[in-house]
Image 1 (tube, one colour):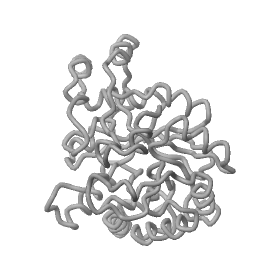
Image 2 (cartoon, rainbow, N blue to C red):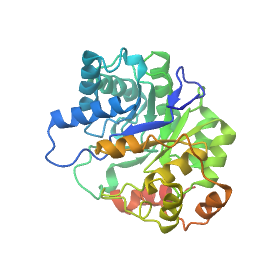
Image 3 (cartoon, rainbow, N blue to C red):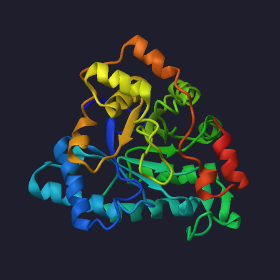
Length: 315
């Protein structure tokens, strides 16, 4: 597994992570979830991405305990665990307690990366969609980031970063941060290439991690336009690879780390097999010319409120 060195983080991060968002398929038992995560560790995954709002922190914690018990890994230090501060805890005095709650769920003493999940605050737990306008508030970036920095100084996390932040939001954060963010986790794939954001983050020393690198097909926000893309499929046939592998390789060649997800053991392994080959200049050019459209829209998921519309419009 290739690794990337992060700014202001005490540990290198595996380039490919196993995502655990959007839960597992309905009616799947806890034991099945745990065994799926164990299979991922056996397959070679060492980075696992979760969040307080996902129903997977506890499952992942149980899988780590089992992996240690079975000797699949010798130490928790072999794993890189990312989790996220949910928006209902996005206040200065709630950040450290929220991180500790996630650590309790994960049965860990520390995580390797703690991210602000979204650049906004929710004053109540989401009970229904769309979200009522009155519970949505702008993020106090200075106060919340101070809480994130405290998590790092207390040893609760080795690194801190953000998710779903635009160039504009990052500029504001960088102007007040004592510890700059190591990561910005955003949607990115060949159909949503995020060129401007990539260039900005590279210049500022912020590592982008791509979520939905395959378009998050079979989720309520994603679609199949990546895995069914004719250009990617044509390249895949020529190279003897899968369309998914071509998409993931393209992300990797942009200098971006990624979080992918599959509950199928074979595809889980295939998603790791992107390091011993490369895309040609001609293939990269064809991919660069693909039509662009984001898959995940905050306004379409949470409601067409001003703050979500503004966040979606920012680059």
